[in-house]
Image (cartoon, rainbow, N blue to C red):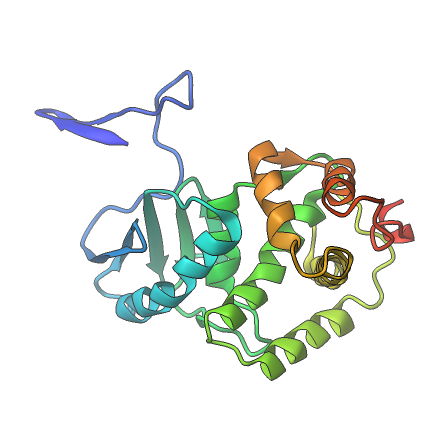
Length: 250
C-alpha cells in the first residue's frame, strides 16, 4: 500500500525488508474505471488514446470473481489491471495484486480459455513451481481459465469440453512436463493431466473433494513441487494418485 505526503507517495510493504513498489504501475493521461466486486476493489486503467474495454472487463469480473473466491478462498483487497495497445507486448503478464493485458486480447479466446482469467489465477494464488515444476503454476492457471468461465456461466458445458479437448490435442506430442519454463503445448498437456487429477479426486472422495481443495493447500505453500502436489492429493484421498504416477513427471 502507499500513503501520500507533500513530496509524493510513501510505499509501505510489510512483506519486504526494503519498501519499494512491486507489480504493475501506470502513469500519464490515463482513463480508469473502478468497482468493488465481491469485496475486491478493482481498477482497470489504460491510456485514453487506446480502445481499452474497461466496462466489459468489469462486467466479466462481476461473474468470475465470486467463483475465484469459492475455488481459492480469500481474494486480495485490491487489483489493478493495466491495459494498452501496441507497441506493448501482445499478451498478459501478472504481478503482485496487478496484471497487464494487451488491449487487443479477447476476454475469451477462440479455444475457450481466457488470458485475463489465467493471469488473475496467478495474481490470486501466487503459486509458483520449484525448479523444473513450472508446469504446476502454468497448468493450474490455464485449467482454471476454462473451469472458472464454465462455473460463472460464461462457457457452456459443451464448450468447456471442447476447450479441454483442444488442450488435449495441443499437448498430445509432449513427453515430459519437467522444465524451467512451461511453454504452450507443455502447459496444454499439464491441463489435461490436472483435469484427470480433478476427476480422480472427485471419484475417490465421492465428490467431497476436488482440485480446488488441492489449490487451497498449494496457496498456503506458495512455492510448490510435484512432491508437494503428490503429498496433498494422497492426504485428501487416502492413497497415492495413479494420475500423477506418470512418465510425464519422471
